[in-house]
Length: 312
Image (cartoon, rainbow, N blue to C red; front, side, top):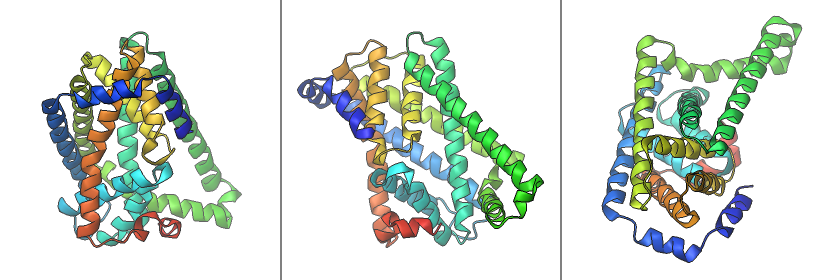
């Protein structure tokens, strides 16, 4: 699907003109955007540090190791489909922080739920305030429907397991145990102080994401209002949440260009901005991830082999 959407996106633009627009983008604004990305990564590492400590991590929860393993996971997401880099991060974190791997996975689930729900809410709100951008509204409504359906399905399944004879069966008991072990990683949200820190840090990374989007589109010569910027950034974030090709190739470009062209931006300018945003947002994390793989003496097999991932 991702490659198909990429082909559709590229077919509607003049690639040469797009390349020219990228070449003349403002270096000073892109430099500021890179600085914002680094701040964003530190904030995300601090948030994961809070979650790891609440989940019972026994060692290595200073900021350096959470930042290192987080960027390794981001790097793996650039290489693996369906966001399997999150599983790789959980596997490695279990070893590094002396904690159960499923509990480590639970901390990452909290991250994803916090970011996803925030961006979904922003998409819904900004769609109401910015007229003429129906596609984001459809994506947001679809996200809400899927989230509600998942909650209903989980609630019904949990009721079946806990309140009926199905709970006595081996698979049901194994599933209950699995959920309980993952839920340990959500301990950071069970206290007022922990939840407040996670919410505050999520708000901070949301603001850095919006600032990053504004700086990059401005560097590409596009003027967006604050509400339009929030709409654009939240749509891009929702495209990243789709478990598709590595690095969400295709869906990222398609959604970004569609939203910007719906705001009256030329297709070539829109694609230039989206490609610049992809490069600026992913390059620092990828470079830090490569450096972390080397510094931590990790093997490639620990990131990409299916049997390693299954061990989580």
